[in-house]
Length: 244
Length: 193
Image (cartoon, rainbow over all chains, first blue to last red):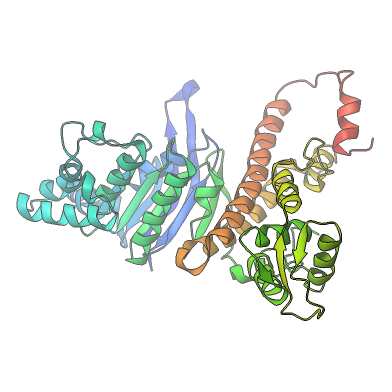
């Protein structure tokens, strides 16, 4: 069953002459444990899709369902709880709070959700430990490398009982080794049942996904079919190309 | 890949028996580049004839015959490692030709054609990435080869993305006349007019 569902979602910014259609009639469903990449160039509407899926913006028309419940029918408090407890967000610029250490950043959403500081800290430390960031736990963001900052941001997004992670160009300006580490973390979260949507223009990042959805000019134009067994790659001459 | 240099590389680690060379050769290259193993012995004979390897000189030619690399062999290997393969001329790239043709064929949406190829390439990349996912399952050499394949496919996707954008912009602007430099470039990328 899909955990996240977008049904015929459109978003229009501005009015009259200045009207811009950011996304148009987008339908997308993501199952628990599924990693979906939305791939498209800048300006294709992929970030808008993510903010609407994350209830950070409302669609002009169409529906967003989370766990089968329509977001439009939720109260502000319900939506806020969803964002605090169920969703994890990862953005390109990391968004770590500079005045807090790595572990404080990671357990902040748990504390905001009412957990005691001590419990939140224990869970935060465990999340960092699982991501091999134990040594970085007490450091401040400006004492971390770019790759470490992004891994801390991902630890914060998957900590606790998150069910959906929304990531916008999660490897940012990182090199490909760090980019791969970031995607491995999201794949691991998927194995725990977390649904993930990654928007990116980068085919190497997208190729970690179970399914890649292509977006152009605000519309979903295509998607990959479930990949065949990779073993076929090791037998040359067995791969059909398109339209050969 | 050159069998000759692959064998020199194996022998640079120390003396080895013929059989052992055959097995290691299969192990290290077979997964990614299956090659004709029968050629291993013939190549060893030629390497010995050229003074790049030495055998332990016993008369029998069986699998227990030992080989070691000579100083000349080490020099040959070092030079080969540093000789760039010929990448200076663009290869006759079938995909490039298809897109260049698709753009001109009436009734064909070049963006749709680009997307067909983009999806195929991303699906291939997904398969290669699956292989990478379980790191414990394969060795370092294999990981390097898979990375190379992913970067190669990625560069093709990026070219398609760029072409997509360029064609979209061009469609909203009037065509510019072909500059005199174009015909030569056309020949180089293998497009016949």
